[in-house]
Image 1 (cartoon, rainbow, N blue to C red):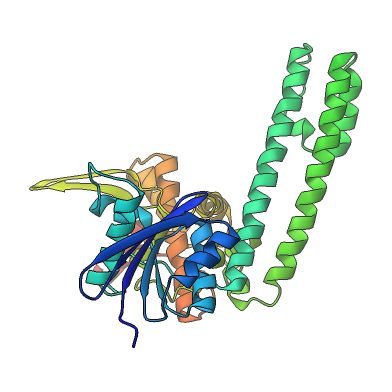
Image 2: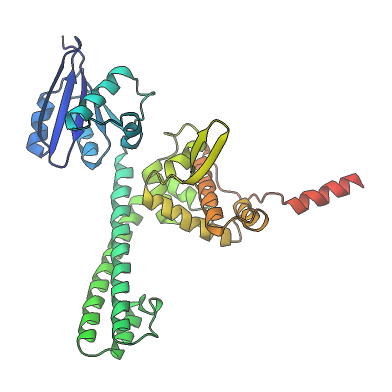
Length: 359
């Protein structure tokens, strides 16, 4: 009968370091390449009774699936941002990191570890599509900025970036250029046409992937929440079942302030910015759209209260609204309910009601 071992794997770009803690306490280790051939050699060293720990990264996602399929042992994905604070050490190298991972799964259960769930195939597809879309839109913005710079260098200052947002407008604007400036602008137009075509193709893939997804359809009922934010929420946070309560959503999206508490001193800093950056930026954009819409209800009143009564800055208030919006999205998925516009009672309304009852 195979004895249970605790295994820690530290992954690099091209190599890995692995440590085994045997049942008698003996520690052994080896290393190898992370290529497909090297990974197959690694899996031959694992037993079905092993308990393996790996820090989350793109390669780790692939390896977890392969280990579960080829070996069948237990694999725990760990959040590296939470492990780094515990295991900050002067002596740090790949061997030490692999050994620390092995000791973690030896001493703690899954509930006690900062583990991460492996995304489903649907969630992984959404992540890949949204990541590509974000990159393509970033490339498009970069090319528009570059084209606008061409006009400035040629002395034409009346053209704005908004004028270059449409392909037909671009072709009209470049007629004002001549010489090398014209040739550069025409090359930029070709690049933009290709990028915009690719964006349309990726948006088509997104529409096909989210077709029939009831969770995304439910989130799109919220004013200001479009298919891109709804898809990103489901892709990176799932249906809400992996979080214990609504308070964990703010931490997962990185929209909660840093806390510095010592004795009687309690300071709140900037937001933590943990979690996916794309999801966080989409939440903030949706929050701006939400507070400007007619059906925004209580969240819009929260924004107005923070900016007009508490004299908070608009950016600070919108981050707070974005966190509440994420919590609302989580609640809808967790409870299975539909969105309803429920405006909160304002202070003036409460005062009127109190005076009427008193009289």
